[in-house]
Image (cartoon, rainbow, N blue to C red; front, side):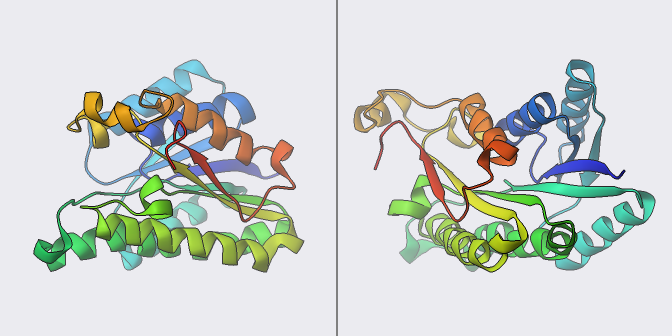
Amino acid sequence: MKTKYALITGGSRGIGKAIAKQIAKDLGYYILITYVNNDEAAAQTKAEIEAETDVSCETLKFDVANRNETQKVLENWQEDHPDSIIEVIVNNAGVTRDGLFMAMSENDWDQVINTSVQGFYNITKPLITPMIRQRFGRVINIVSVSGVKGTAGQTNYSAAKAAIIGATKALAKEIAKRKVTVNAVAPGFINSDMTQDLDEIELKKIIPANRFGEAQEVADLVSFLASKKANYITGEVININGGLH
């Protein structure tokens, strides 16, 4: 029997870390987390998962936006783990480079689009075939309220996440018969590194729930979608935003 893994991109901190820990606890998957720079955070997340659960955690350091690098790392991992399969993919990696579109640099546009959109392709494309062959798998894309409704000052981020929403719906239709589900989770304002500089007092006024969400709340939802309880849910964009629509 193959050892089953869940891969979480950008899994060393914030929402990604919470997701990795919850999937390990709830579903017993061995965990793979990807990260780009923060060795200390990745090591800490690995240590916490292994201390709190009975599963092992491995860390892979690479940039999901870099196709050649991603392909090489995934191929090397698979060669080193011939009796293992990645059964769950959580495309969580993302960056923000906020600013008004009229003043947005090419780099700020490219970096955001490449991390989310190219990252989705670079990770999912090589890993989807084994799922289809075994007739089970989960692809869960972390998008954003910005991709659902658009957010001023985030044209790049809104475009990137909206693209993944479209990809989620299309891919779900392509592979549903193979019992591989594809869903998106769209958080609103969640307490994390990405929101720490925002004016929480002012923003709470436009959130019906009158608070920011917690990474753990997102993690609980993603863990459910990764489970067999969610077999009949695919092609969905599930908002978790305290009523901010």
